[in-house]
Length: 212
Ligand code: PRP
Ligand code: URA
Image (cartoon, rainbow, N blue to C red; front, side, top):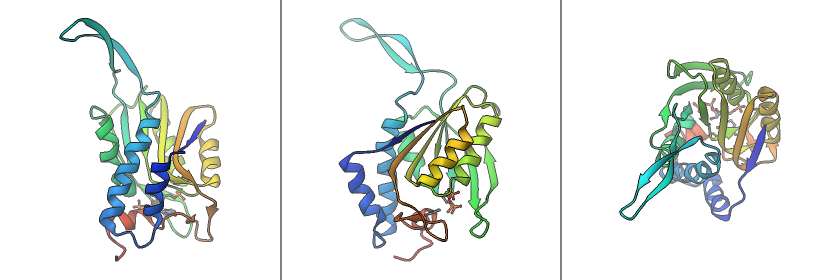
């Protein structure tokens, strides 16, 4: 498994505002969107393309376009939905599938409550979006789900991750082709398995369940 942790002052700056508990919900949502677009640039470095001939007003030259089947983008509901626009802005022709997963806050086990993926995931290059990689249970479940359906390789994009989460994904990936792109690698987990220092509950802060 390949792991990329962003190291760019603009990403760190936006992350710092995102972490602030006083950042209001509309700003939080906008920052998740902007961070996703910045992370997508790195995450799509290996996106599959093929050559084609393009004619400029001056001459013929070779260009590239995305290969078929198109990349499949899978936000994990709820919080991953906040990253979708930022991703498809960069890859507008990608296909989008949805996975709804919720972590039981007692057992920390994820359950899958919704699934809307294309009929065939065979041989697809998949991009999974979820802002938070905490214990890694949810993302590991999503990655396994996609490989079980025939995915060829999976790139997971998370705004924050922990060392525990990275190890869980490494274990789930085994020798399969998995890339993990993180905005930052935080210290670890607290006793409630929240990311420290983290940013709190991403879904609640995105969708307004927290008052500000
Ligand atoms: C959050 C987050 C991840 C998961 C991370 O979702 O968006 O999906 O927890 O935790 P883990 O790495 O320990 O599995 P949550 O289950 O709170 O659902 P939500 O997106 O609907 O808020
Ligand atoms: N889910 C979140 O939204 N935040 C955390 O810190 C951990 C899991």
